[in-house]
Length: 233
Image 1: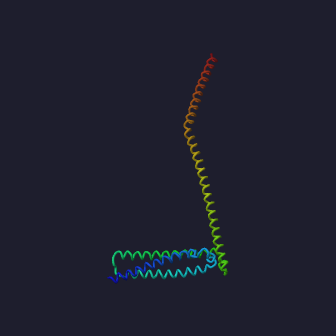
Image 2: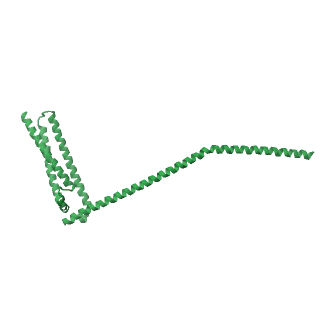
């Protein structure tokens, strides 16, 4: 049992040491994959004029990290094959497995981002520049490529701003039209509310006209009767 505990401690120390090494490797690997390459500012021109060197370093470091990940996986399997020595040991083993899984995910993510960056550079560079054999021309084409991409991004940003301005103007116009329709609706409501008063006034006028007509007719009839009586007498 003591030998099992000693073997477990040795494997655990080896796993921790290897995890620290992988962590440092992944930091450098991420910088190279992003294009910085870990070079100092004084050697930035060298990074531009020798892109193939960066690819070689990336591939070499990628192979080293893969081997280290496989070695860490083997250590974890060896620890899991030992008889269980308690819940703490099981928790530690689970933690080592989670760390290994996190390292694998980070490694795959860096590789995928690097591949996407290379494909984007190849598309922007074009077939004419991509076949150039001069390192200085290659570095120059990379700078021109980034400047062209920056110009495209700026142009796209301006187009988006123009579309936003058009949308804002359209919203303001729609708001003004809605306010105008509200005012018209208010006027229509006022007119409809006044219609009963107007109708009542018209009815009163008509009643008065009919009454005046009846009175005038009665007066005329009375006068006609008087004239007829006077004529026959």
